[in-house]
Amino acid sequence: MGALIYDDSEHPIFIEDRTLAHLKVVISTKLRRQESFTLSWRHADGQPVGRTTIWLHPSIPLRFVFDDAQPPELNAAWIERLMHSANTTGGIQLVDEVDEVDGVEEQPEQA
Image (cartoon, rainbow, N blue to C red; front, side):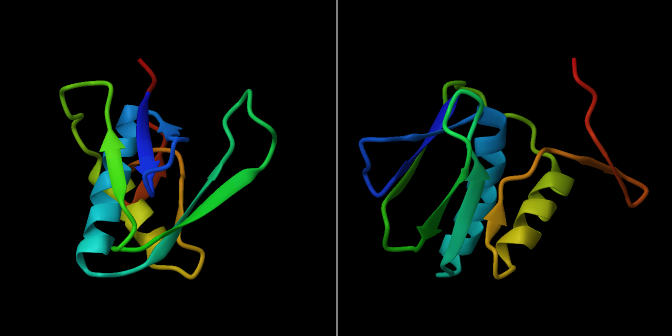
């Protein structure tokens, strides 16, 4: 389980490493372009029901911390889906990973 450290907060946002790696690509791309946006997610099981949204801006410190030393292979379809949501007025919606085959989205097989 990785963590997104936002604004040097003492309360990291815990996100699974694979998801965090994909978010890192999208967030880094947007911030490199000097674009501000929001990131929203539903609370994990075991937390109070609800969702959280944070405002991301190039001037706000942000750190990605991964448990796994090796970066995962990235899923281009998932990155594209996350990037598409990042470019909407609702900002990035943390969505489940999908694979795209012949223009049709499919859930990846679980090992």
